[in-house]
Amino acid sequence: MVILGLMFFIFGFTSWINSMLVPFFKVGCELNHFQSYLIVFTMYSAYLIMALPAGNILKKSGYKKGIMAGFFIVACGALLFVPAAIWRSYPLFLAGSFVMGLGSAMLQSAANPYVTVIGPIDTTTKRMAIMGICNKMAGLLAPLIFAAVIFTQQDQATFDLLETGTLDPVSREAMLDSLVRRVIVPYSIFAAFLFCTGIAIRYSKLPEIDLEERNSAPEGVSDGKTSVFQFPYLILGVVAMFLHISTQVVTVDTIVSYAGSFGINMMDAKVFPSFTFALVILGNILGAVLIPKVISQTRMFQVCCILGLVLSVGVISGTRIVSFMGMDAGLSIWFLVGLGLANSLIYAGIWPLAIRNLGRFTKTGSSMLVMALFGNAVTPLLYGAIVDHATPRIAYLCILVPGFLYLTWYSLHGYKITSWTKRQRI
Image 1 (tube, rainbow, N blue to C red):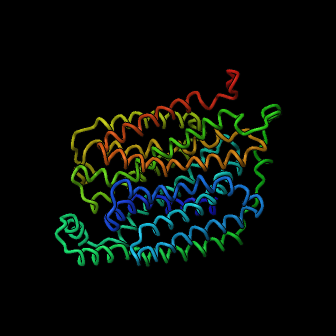
Image 2: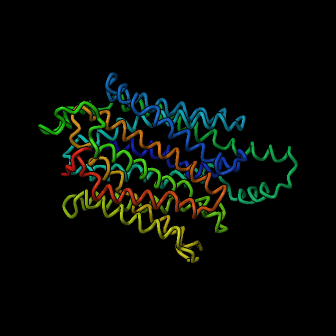
């Protein structure tokens, strides 16, 4: 559990730092909204490409060697940020994000099944909640560490000066080069840490697992099944995972930019992702304490989905400016922050319901759920495209409300469907 917790923290840090990378590179590489979210797209498009091959690699090489390879790949992606920063090359930054995504997909393919099979299926959400604390703690710390290492107190004046467009081309280029090159040292250190972590896990006491044996289906459940697509609750669960990841990434990766529409500058808005992750961590702590003694993991999943739907309506309808936590911000932003609590246990709720009783299809089912993390790639682009032509509230209306409507349906009814042709439910 300690080793898995470290893994969840590291790929959480790799992923959630995007909440600061997106606005940072938007300024440093002079991008529009759509282009800036391509950084997120390239990272998570790798999940779609790598998820199924990762399952085969893990099966052939063993989980420990596969995990080591995953860390090495992420480290190589981090190192690509060094030449990208030296030349202020936007395509190289995209390439680095893509390679980091390939390694993260490998780690996800290994870590999530581990958490599922190392204990009883009815307490999976409890273990996922503990892993979620590790993952989201990284999300809480990542933007703060990035801001502390990269930014200075004088940067807001620099950003304001760049926006005026009054600088001559030579001075402007020099200022942007200096800004972007600040990522060289921290990403070099991060890469070295990842290499060392991969080697340490290779020689750790982490046991090998047999997914098919550990998650074998009861007699009659998978008899005669010839395809993973014959499990409706899995396929519907993959859709649910895609939409959950979509709503979650929009909540975190857009909140700094959304705060700008209320006149809050980047230096002040950097705390909002951390507020969101603080609520995610709170939700995971509640899950670890309450499940299953006080509330079942399925019931907690349902509560989170319904809460997310309610808060989503608040995001698009809240118009008042309120003062809270030392910030004067629109009520809509605080509803967006509140979605951190709703999102906290949805991932952990989907996974055991979608992967249960798959037998020999367990590895493929797990890979499909990892592929659903592609929602992290598509949705920020969709959000950016809508914002470039409309408003952030319209974008949230198009993404958050439909997403949580489906998640609520799946949590109440969809996971019970066991046959496409017969109205069989559990």
